Length: 396
Image 1 (cartoon, helix red, strand yellow):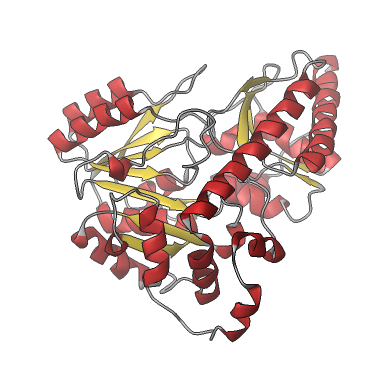
Image 2: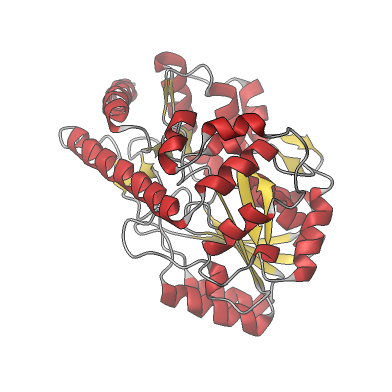
């Protein structure tokens, strides 16, 4: 099945000179509302408004909330709650609340990187950052993770920092799409090299709190003051993507002021309703409950998936995640994962993400954050559909 040229252009072309289409988001946006089974999401099943009451949010109190602009940088209450996540390493004035972590990534790049700056980027990743860096004409060096463990190559990163003294290094940790994350020792080794070179560490930590093993530290808990940026939000681990609440945490007044200056050109302020709900739900006891909920959903779904795969040899090679609510799977019988994903959608109304959107052919990323009763039905159908496609490939 051929991919329409119009779709290829929408995924791999340019919006304007220098700014490529964001393949992953375009792929999902074009298909997610008409798919019958959506396994393209990387977060856990979202909470309902009624479920928020289980976490101490008085829904009726929202009725009295005036629908004004609110605080440009986020309300003091919300910023204090977010700062608490960093265990004393950040304070309320170090937090800028954004409309999702995507806006946090956007304003951070524009506030910290200039044309011609050398930067190192951890790949594969969400791939928003590489697109934006290309647009502003930064000199980008890719630092590739490799199978089978997809660990962040700290030694290679240190070599690049010492050789090029880059303005910044961008890391997705825990990593999307591989689910790997750095140990405290690895993070400290990277931080030491970055401190010596004056390299800013920018970490997308939106999956922080979903670790299946040892809990990870945030980069701002390890790195010297002002030399680290943590980007995170409530969409993935906390099951609140519709609030569109993200943030940047950085202990640098200069960077905070630049972030706010850029934000004046984007969303101005977070939604006052989202700010209000987030500030009420982000007590530490709720944070622990929501993180536990995310981990339990993932563990139950991994058990379901392993059982389903036990009688389906050769269909895919899964790299089981150490964090996150998704799997990264190699398809051993084809490199054209875009064609496979497109056929899954057009023939079976199944949406998964092709490796081409992470610049790695022959892979799929599939979400495992649904409610288990739904995931069990979904994954059985998806795997059966892939088997049918594989059979036709083999016959061809």
